[in-house]
Image (cartoon, rainbow, N blue to C red):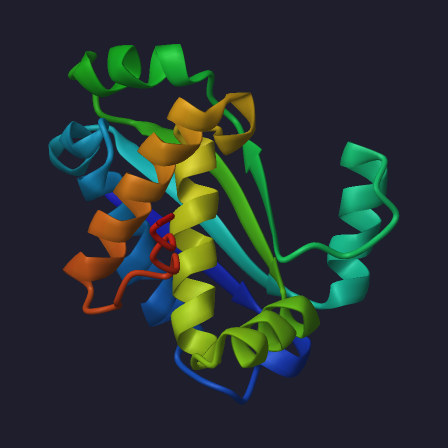
Length: 173
């Protein structure tokens, strides 16, 4: 089973039902991934989604990635991806923390405006993206991995009624 805990603070507070968005998008990401069996597992797999300020994300990004700037989303996995299936198949129930996904309000709002989409739509994409990182997907390891991750993101977002966030590539003539 999938459990989603949310923490909403600062500018995010009065702008939408962020816990419901987090729950819906984390579940969609897991269902679209190679880890869809987690939803039916007796073990409760928890994902924590934090809707934070740019300052908070900047501090985390500086501390953990040596990048002294805010970024749109950070993911902090708590389980090695190779162990997720073993834990899910253990049959003993219990709870396992997959990890934390943290979004920066200002960066998310700016990117949404630049893309011409609602902040909820962009936040959903970032939550799906961050959840896939918790599951071991990594777009920075090569083009094939990036394509795999984007395909899963498209599928997860389509499942919750959000259109493709990646612009169609222009055809070279």
